[in-house]
Image (cartoon, rainbow, N blue to C red):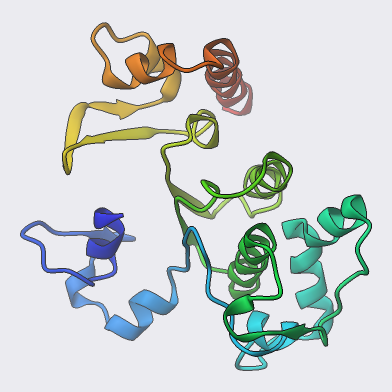
Length: 222
């Protein structure tokens, strides 16, 4: 979370962040932040219609907004729970109080998809939602986003990151330099803090399997 704040220049840092090879200190602050959507643990929604929350500046047509909601999994979640389907005209209370945390997460993800950003940050986004909603969000991240979108996931839930291209381990606010690699590689490192966390997990075998499948998939695509 601290690295995310530093990337968006919310806190002063001694080091330098580069976005597409450009020092972020040289970028317009509003442009920097508007191009990097963050989905936090509890996203904020504004009072108004669902359409207004997805597209506050009215830059997109309804078809694009509905496609984003569908791809993000909101309609699938409603179908499974037997709820009346939302429309773009559906009312959103202040803060999104008439939606569950999971629904707000999916709406925030759809909003990011509408914007077409090339970098998306999830900051503990799925730590407070149920397994079904988490699965829908993970499905969207893995299969519905364009291939040129980079996703940075800040998470303690290991399943959310096991099929990442690379994992960075931080301890007490510091990056452990030897632990920035593909998850399968980290699991093979003796003395790895990441390996220790996985080995202590109750779903150890599944996590190892996810890492192995991701590595095999990477080889098939290359």
